[in-house]
Image (cartoon, rainbow, N blue to C red; front, side, top):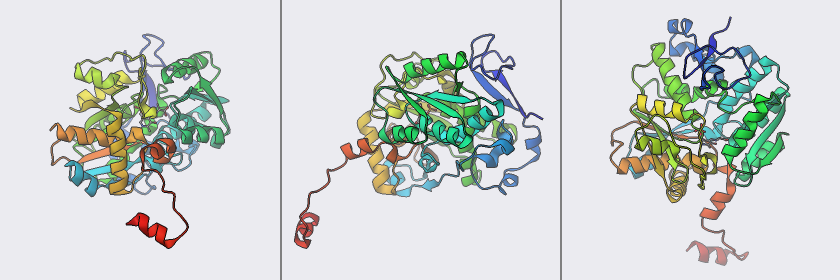
Length: 404
Ligand code: F0G
């Protein structure tokens, strides 16, 4: 028996067509409504028999665990980052390191659920537009499921590691003239004509899997709800997914407080932060987004309105950080904590530092920064921003001279 239905997030009507990503009645965004009545009889420790990871939380997922297409996603470390916290004035600081997922980003959480659902539907071909990580993840899960896969990437500006992954897993890798927003428009057209089954986060099954990062954080903190969760915002589904997870944990009575969801954008790609500054529920799309954090180089975020609700309802915040601060935060995390994240992910840390300096974050807050992707995804940015390698003669003396 099904534990969910798909409804319109805007007008609330039921949506029965599994191939549409917008409401047939009002054109609104879709969402999954979970039936959690049975879960109310459980407590968090009842789930702990299963290893930590996305499918531990199957009670909150709209796909039968028996159909899971899984490469053991989730179960990523939550680091207590004392040295970094001391440096930026937030002693109780944690980093949730999503780079430890199978394909190196949080996208695997949504993709295991999205591709499992695609298999349930019996579709032959899946596809997505992507700034890189979504395509790498979809390509891997499509390979695992034996599905054909096409990924639509903005021409240029996709980090080398992500591109290599999509090629490696055997997807048809299409370079589209334009940016991510253009690539997504084409992928959506393909999906409307039923040529592909779309697995961008406008597909309501994707955020369902992404809820699991919040469930894991709660397990890892023994249900001591953090005051604030900070994350980068691009197409804006992840912050919404985390909000949805929080509301579901409240619904089943497992938490009674909401962490302040805090969305960070790059200065050159910041429609959500601008809407927050203007206190509006909708955003104005940006034509030419630009940032070194290519993962979040997005001007027209599909889930932007949902993201703004997530921020407002939790008493959260949104702001921007310049590229230079993103790179500085990326290095700081590496050099204080030994954690290597990609630029978009470092935006969360740069945002934490900035908001602490502004006094928005109090010194005594318990804060979790979600670092969404592995630094090795984008080796070029790292190499270009570190001290150059040192040419050294093959002698002990030459080495000593350099070390001194
Ligand atoms: N961090 C990383 C590393 C990402 O790859 C993305 C999005 C985000 C943050 C933002 O998440 O879109 O849910 O707000 N990457 C997408 C992609 C757009 O195609 O890989 P969001």
